[in-house]
Length: 494
Ligand SMILES: Cc1cc2nc3c(=O)[nH]c(=O)nc-3n(C[C@H](O)[C@H](O)[C@H](O)COP(=O)(O)OP(=O)(O)OC[C@H]3O[C@@H](n4cnc5c(N)ncnc54)[C@H](O)[C@@H]3O)c2cc1C
Picture 1 (cartoon, helix red, strand yellow):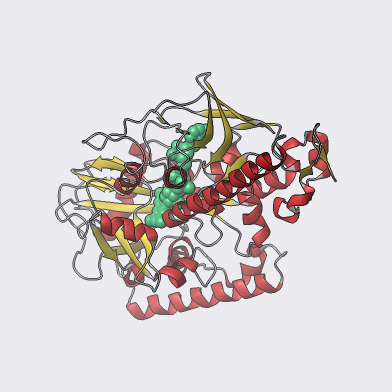
Picture 2 (tube, protein in one colour):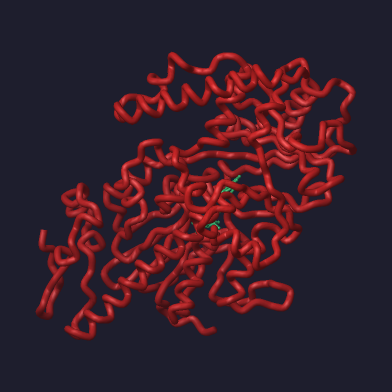
């Protein structure tokens, strides 16, 4: 399809939220759209790779939130595409906890430590709820986990089972079952299925549509009342009436993209107030199995005096029998540390831990795969992690459009941030808001035949921007945006 010089919408990023946004636009008759993607592929944080003879998922691996009253839309997509999945129950991990000499902690000790960790987490949450301004680390000091098993359980609880405040919307809305994707087409197959409904795709499933441009790293968004000019690293310039920006919160924080005029302060503050979780799955391939398999053995834990040190392990025999692959998950500081060292150093550390658990006779790993989400300048982390007691304002501000730039992505989903379905649903929400804006624009244009009425913030330079920095998009009634009934330059009312 021919792209007009100025298209209706440019979507920056072809992860699940960007692809969903383009799909919703197409379904609503807006197909003069460009999708600019920095990488050489679509999918973003949904990414497969061939490793050790099977397909492994470097990014999202699970479809979380299945089996409830409402269908999870991502699960629905997976079912329609016959995506192969396995049910995961990692709650058993707490009964497969090894100490440094390879002994498994008796289930009673593990259960006791688990109970203690849950109680202390609840206590901490309650205290935080009653004094939200007090530093959480100070509140937790008295009940802080100290022994290796307590540290390991604390890690499982906070970095796996309870990374969110209860009640967890994903489980409440969609159910508490989780399915691991184990399909050689990869989790990303779902994105290709979505894309083929509106982008030209070859019989082999390759997207051949010129509206999708890969290897286009967006570096600057110049926005005004007339539209948005998008500059990419290779010097290309693309113009559009609107932009949907779907890059991760880590990319927004990294300043890879500059905005002209700069984003207002309420927006930059909100962006910097959202934490980022780094979550790394390290894959190890062995010549044969030496770990226990069978029921309730899929996940196991290493208790070490350093929290999060090669703590959480999974074997891939349920997903791919005979693959002889182990996965160990590291997070945050440990993720950054191993990203900075060579894979051989990581392999040596992991082997030492495995030998502590399973003895010195186990074979060396034949191969290792270490994804680097933190150092990837198109990701800068794995997913958003809102402060425990987030006010609605923070997510609202992160999501709120600035002039003609609309924001989407998992980090803009109030209920499902961090998840694939959060990205999917945010793509729909943001696009609905944009379509509404476009419709309003047309109505106004037809009524007055003058020019588009623009939000105040889009027009504000840096001086006005400070003056309005305490205002938030949703606090400003539309009438207070710019208004004029006569011809002439629009003026700010405030
Ligand atoms: C290791 C890991 C494990 C995870 N596990 C799970 C899980 O089990 N279950 C689950 O539900 N979720 C999981 N997630 C989270 C899930 O992957 C994300 O929430 C979701 O994929 C985010 O989609 P998105 O469209 O918001 O962002 P992204 O997928 O990040 O898409 C944004 C796109 O923008 C592109 N981009 C960035 N900068 C630019 C630029 N300057 N110019 C042009 N393009 C740019 C990026 O390349 C990317 O393709 C995991 C994530 C990671 C990393």
